[in-house]
Length: 311
Image 1 (tube, helix red, strand yellow):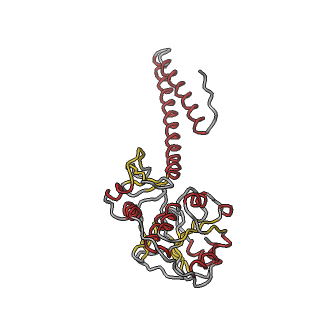
Image 2: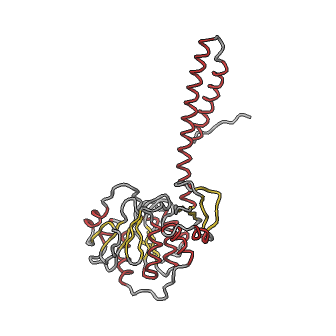
Image 3: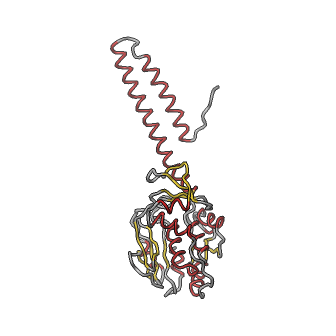
């Protein structure tokens, strides 16, 4: 984004709203963007009306949306295990601006932004994607290209000029109104928590939400496959897999620690029993050896070391 900002024309004819996966970490991105380019950059503020020539950055650990012509900053449910996330910003822009919205997916991991970019297209807007060959992390651009009918693919060197041209173009005719499923999805994650919205767009799945433990609903007829829980957390199938990989890894290491701790306790028990009666600790020693073997097998599994199986 710094490279794009440095090449944008001064007094850019439209507001730019930008979300980056910074999590809860403090960010100085607005200062850097202002320093690099001719347009002012700032964190989006609640109730602010976006102005041309300004870059609005989603604050750390907050989603940034557009509702009724104003910025909404909210520490709502994580989307794709991120806050801020890109999909809710795109989706709100699609509903608010219709054919005037231009969504741009830049470098990034997994597939946040794909569903939101589809929403922009369905509401008559334009979809722009960074050339995957030009991206440091091509996963997000590749996902957008796989699922969205993209209008423009460009490198960072060309994006500033392209955005300037698109922002200066006449509004496109025939804007599409947001589909009811889009309204229901937005309500299910960022509006009315009534379960009727979730039931209208999805069906209960066999999976649970990694963030709150609630049941995940699989959204109907959506590509990529996506899930939302009743509190609003949302995932694509890819992000759900990635998050579960993290939690599974943690659980496996916790299990290894528990096995090793139990082995140490049982060995201590064997020592105490042996001190009272010769041979009295034999059963405990056998159990300790079995635990040691189980620990070695589990460690090799976690570390990806091949495990020999003897029939």
